[in-house]
Length: 227
Image (cartoon, rainbow, N blue to C red; front, side, top):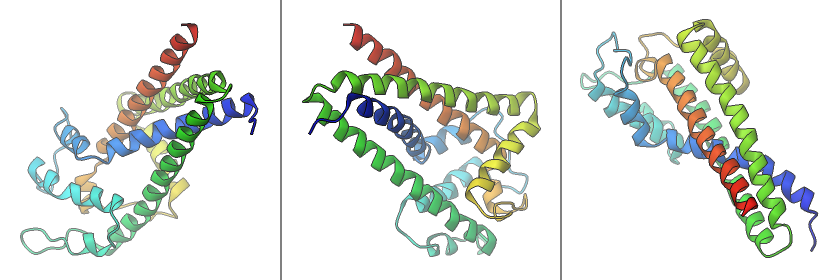
């Protein structure tokens, strides 16, 4: 079967950013990110008493829930040392929604990665290899542009115009969640574990990871084509 090189190139260009973003998401869902984030300079102290050790004790349960196959009872059964439940019903409902979005995003990542691998294996044995490399290079540049714009929004929101990140964050949630199901009290556990600074850093780190991957592909593929 002879697949047009242009189709190979375009498909590869589309899949590449999905793979890079999925890879960044998967890294953010690892224990390493929590360790780094909670020890970042200037990370806000919990006014209601959670220490860094407390956050590192309880936050991994929330992250694990997003990627495991357990039901919401996994989080519903958690209690502080005084017997108080960690999460209220509103928080538990939101976490179910977040799990659905996260699982969906990871499935897109796995499908994109598998598809990209199959295209690479096919193209390597055919005459479309150069088209595949060109698709990788172009997809890398697309990722750089998108991730750089995201990083700029986050940085401006962090240091110059705080309302900008709030608008972005609200828009992001409106895209994936219904109504105001994601808005909580400052005393709620989800906010105490994952304050707005956590999400600013998460988006920024994801953008930087994606930019690094995009640069590696864009520059590396360009070099390989010139050799």
